[in-house]
Length: 212
Length: 269
Image (tube, rainbow over all chains, first blue to last red):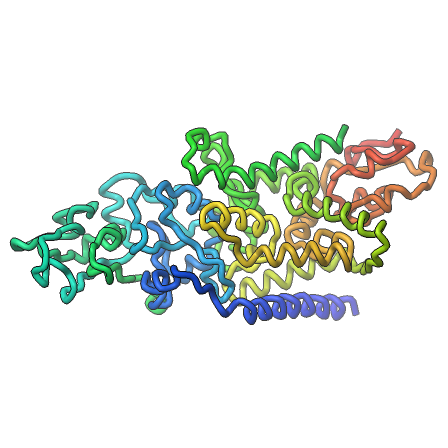
């Protein structure tokens, strides 16, 4: 009799959580309609995932491990890490980057402070960063890039790249950039600096929800 | 003497929660010192070491269905404190408790104006079912459900939203809901009957060393302590149970000085 009572109350607890979370889903599926929504969408949300800070484990495990303590947001010296407050999905309150607003300068402070192993520690060593960090991959849009359409001698992405001549190489008199996909860490500094309005060099995600 | 000390600790914690994120947006130099706690009560960094809420660790174990050993160590300090001193986190540190106690005073003021409030009374053990159901949902969906509802986590997150993104998040609605519910319908509803973090700390600190005890022969049965206890307990009988959070309100308000902090196994004289 006591066991039945216990089970009944446990089911009551589970039902309470279901109703509470479900009703919050109904309320917050609208999402926020501010000007950043397009930028968030373009920064990888269209792949069903987001550009995570350096050292992040695979996306599914990241969502399970991140305890939403915001220490990475607090420690980031250039305030490049963003969070969303929507309850519409499991990405709520988890850190991500919007490279067209601000790229990562690879200081590796965020994965030093992460307590729960969602971001794994990578030393401040340049070679370790080059070897271990893989946030995404830069892709050049050859139809709009000023150097490719011979509108300007640009090479801005080459100048800000933390690994020039390895991740991004320039060719020709117009400084046409090409990306070495093995060496690129996906920090997004090139996308931040790109002078075209639609950003002719963009970070594409490798780690999406589907191929984890 | 005990209650002013508790108020000072609580206000210190709340002011740290509010001002450290707001100052760290300005890259203040003094905040780089390792003695300044960075983060929130949910998980903070002090002298390069991480200290996390045991509920965060338990929730992460259930959500990821694996045990990440370095994260387990971060809960050791709170668990040692809870095993020795009981739920002192709830009574002395938790920012939601601080706000709720002022909300309780507001409730008394509202009562004086003639507003007829309800006071629904539930069972104290309901919070263990909230904890169990929450762990089941966490393991089923693989998301951190406790971080969405646990008020210390939500409150500090809202401060971060204000400091870094200049707006509040959705969690503030939840805090306001709890406060209004406690103000009008059920007194101290969240802490008494619902809080999963309080439930976990109750279970951990069940056999704690420091308890509130009193000699029943000296007691004159004025029953003041029962009305004053924030958790709605009878301190003479329940002070050694698992629900008491050792806040000491009953000790300071007892007219006969019957009650006091005692060791569990010491004899009363």
